[in-house]
Image (cartoon, rainbow, N blue to C red; front, side, top):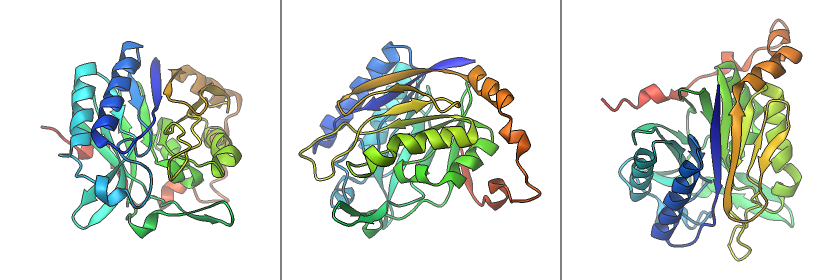
Length: 288
């Protein structure tokens, strides 16, 4: 089984309508190039920053961003992993990824589980928890090609989450993310390759394009890594779309050569699946 994956790295401005129009244009471009699954970057409808989240937040579904993605998914007959947007639910805000099938139906959503609260002296301090609430479940969805696990940016640092997805049958992990100019050069590619190698799965990331004048400057470098840990597609800091042909036979090939999934010593350590409390799957969103 093989399919074409597209990761959109777009520049995000202060105008939500302009951001949505640009996202739809890139989705059309990726679909025309043969992509079946298309992923947008973290915070694609809003500048990334705690001061922006309340202003740009909207309900999921029902807001203009998810309406635009639903329409684009249906018109282009593709799966859309909608990066993330600030979501308003009652008196709480979340950093949320909405996923749509080729019929334009919302099949699941992932609320960022691990909030980005860091303090690197002299470099960067960022506290998502000042305005956002964390999600309370992991998220996976099924396609005719494979099962896919979703995380958002900082989620990628937590190896247990990726292990659970792998143990639950995911072949591809998608992480919309916006690493910065401190953590990006040091960790962005290394973490992606680690998650792919640890679990022998494909790992793909979609970042906003870099804007040196923004309050938060993204590293960019959207990438796709195969189960061998090889970066098979990537870009640098500018706007654009990267593509990768995801050949699932490669996953099986790697697992036969180095069969770590069969060699784990669960008699000595507890598998992550035993600690799993909540997982959100696409069957939670039934359109009928």
